[in-house]
Length: 171
Image 1: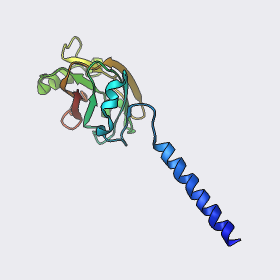
Image 2 (image 1 turned 90 degrees about the vertical axis):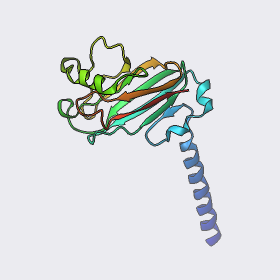
Image 3 (image 1 turned 30 degrees about the horizontal axis):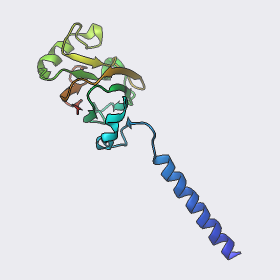
Image 4 (image 1 turned 45 degrees about the vertical axis):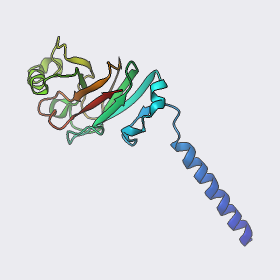
């Protein structure tokens, strides 16, 4: 009987380990909050599309400060507002800007664009942006990664850009 209990325990442990290992494997090239940005390897260059999940919270923080992609990739970016506060008081978005954009000047213009959810209309510095989100909301956008270089991304809600910003690195 004791032998049976040991054998059963070993079998259960082996099955659990196999399940844990298989749950950690991903077939897609998703970048999520739990995965370090460095997890995007050279294999990502072979992918036509990269899926990125970016979360913003009620503490005015994104969970990623750097995003790595490859030139020409189709980027599918999902922004989740994981907080609970409404859009009017704690709205978040993702705005990707051209290289060399004056962030202070952009933020000043964005703060005047309340009617368009703080996205200045006709601004040629914007490569891509999500809509402004309140707590519990999500938005997904699709765009082509620009030419190689480092770009800035930020939240254009007034006062947020000082904390909610990062680098979008195109290899």
